[in-house]
Length: 247
Image (cartoon, rainbow, N blue to C red; front, side, top):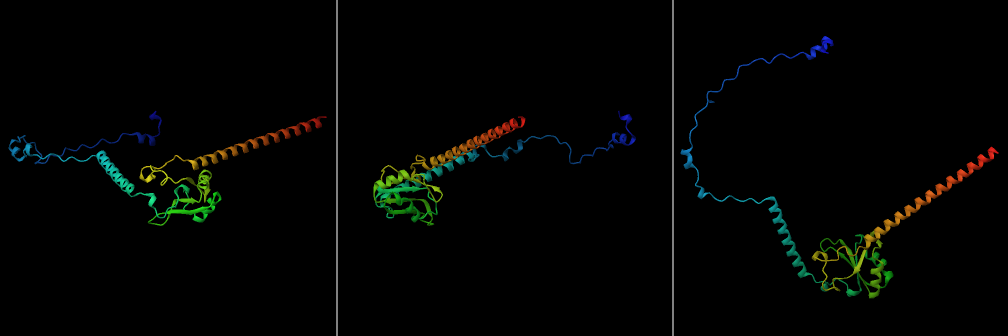
């Protein structure tokens, strides 16, 4: 096929000139082959194997991680034992008077004031004292408080009804005070606590989501039913108009 190409294109397929021949470079005079010799005369320069020190063992990455994990666990256990020995909720001077009338309120908004909390829980009965827990170093609120009622029945009513209520945009969690009413109870920072056993706010959020989904589903059903009625009405009008026009 190349014989049909024009000369300007045939020039593109022409072979290149051969590579020019160059004589090989002569080796340097110092680069010459020498005969092999033995190394027996150098054996005295080596150290005695019996006097060789044992090799230093280097800690591997897995061993270093395990060691740091163990040290961290030991420090945590020591701190836990120390804090557990110092923890005595019955000797808190700033706490409430009667533990059986005290309600624990958690997951509070940091901007929630004592006046706001008193107004929310005053509907269940007369309140004797409210303790808003704050950080000892910074003075900022910790997000939970203790509400002491004058009567124990009011505390139980608030614990049953206020759990999951929204205060300042946050769903609160309520519970009885367990530090002074349960001898075997310890807070979560000391290795115990209730954890997620009371999932009232989560259930409330789930109920709100289900309620919204049901409301949207009912709205869609009503919209489809309204559209169907409109189509039927327009169809009847069109049929009547066609009947009168034909008649």
